[in-house]
Image 1 (cartoon, helix red, strand yellow):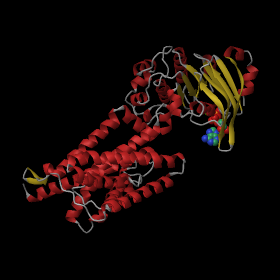
Image 2 (image 1 turned 90 degrees about the vertical axis):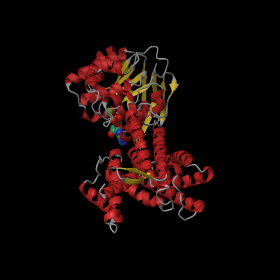
Image 3 (image 1 turned 135 degrees about the vertical axis):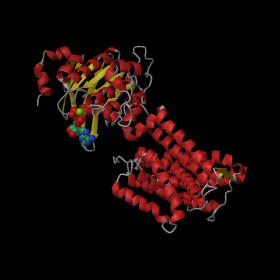
Image 4 (image 1 turned 60 degrees about the vertical axis):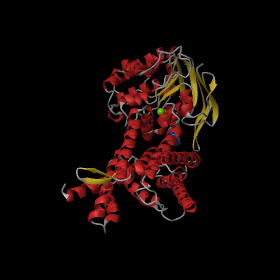
Length: 293
Length: 237
Ligand SMILES: Nc1ncnc2c1ncn2[C@@H]1O[C@H](COP(=O)(O)OP(=O)(O)O)[C@@H](O)[C@H]1O
Ligand SMILES: [Mg+2]
């Protein structure tokens, strides 16, 4: 194959891998926003925490698969506790979105400081599991197996999410709750439980992304800010609460990042924000936003 | 008595909106609650459904005290409620609107006909035709039908319906009336709030008339027919 074409394909796959990871984080964020109307500032911290938990479980069990199973599970449980004992309390008092924003911001700081005091401020190295190490060769291209694994895993979770949301009764309840929670409870459904479930689901997906990202990105206390900022852009540009928007924009950002670094490395860090500014000036509610929040 | 409210008092902030509401609905009957705009009919239904909490008073459903319970607990105890605004889920299809809240009856269900999608579609052929349309794309009449049908899917013992004929074309009003009559015949007790006197009187076994925040006159529909002056006192502006 023409080396230039090969380079394009490799960059595109890099972009896809990061874009899908971003989607796993951003989809939870946008789902929670769609239902509860709050932007959970601690969401990316859960992603980061899961990456650290991956490191810890690896240290204990030496099994990446065990980490992939346990770390997101622990993260989801933590998400459940945060919802039950903090967010729900603040919501019950009707203190408004500012209070919820401050609360989740506080939680993200507590997680960041805890991570520093437990694991230190140095970057941790997590090696790629041996079974996924090495390069795959196809059509004359050599590409890291681990990144292909991330892409495949993310698509599986995307498929799972779409199936749950559109094919199950629970999914219908979740979508109905996003548009009118009061009416859902009139029909006999305990909506706080639905919120908690969605919160836990979002935390779990962020947790899976955290484990998957751990061997690929550097695990350090600033990871939450780095990925959180991108996820935030995805949710706003995609349209608050829109899953389709989150998907489209995650992939766009992934590619923008990947090709930006390749072709205009000096501008790469601001590309994302330039993109956000342009989209929002044309469509203030984002690509798929309905603007009812 | 399947549903009973005693001395309900409701406040919106400082304004004392319900100042003593008493209601009783016999099993298998239709009770019509009427009164001028702003008297507190919708607020009464909200208090019965648990959407707002009364400050004083007591509500019992099938002999169980449900005062102050959450809306979903009251629904699970056998109450169906169709709010004035209909509140069809705009982003869900007709069929998803119907199935998302489907549940079996609260009791043993032996006096009731079971409502499921098939039965609903037989009684609401318009909904069957629009089965895969989004809630947002329905006409006002269709949304009203869907709101009632969705409540039936929860197999309630008591159905509260707020102003179902509001904003509907005369032909749709007749359709809604026939459906409410059938629902009542199928074993559901109905508490209806409506401004359409003809429809209300044709459905009601009993009528309750409401003044400012208080229930006043209460008797059978036949008895009220003989006293147009009472009706005029409560309903004429
Ligand atoms: N959310 C609310 N906040 C404050 N006042 C309200 C609210 N809803 C209704 N009211 C007031 O309560 C009174 C009764 O309203 P409502 O129950 O809707 O009357 P009806 O259904 O008989 O027309 C009215 O005076 C109305 O203005
Ligand atoms: Mg009203």
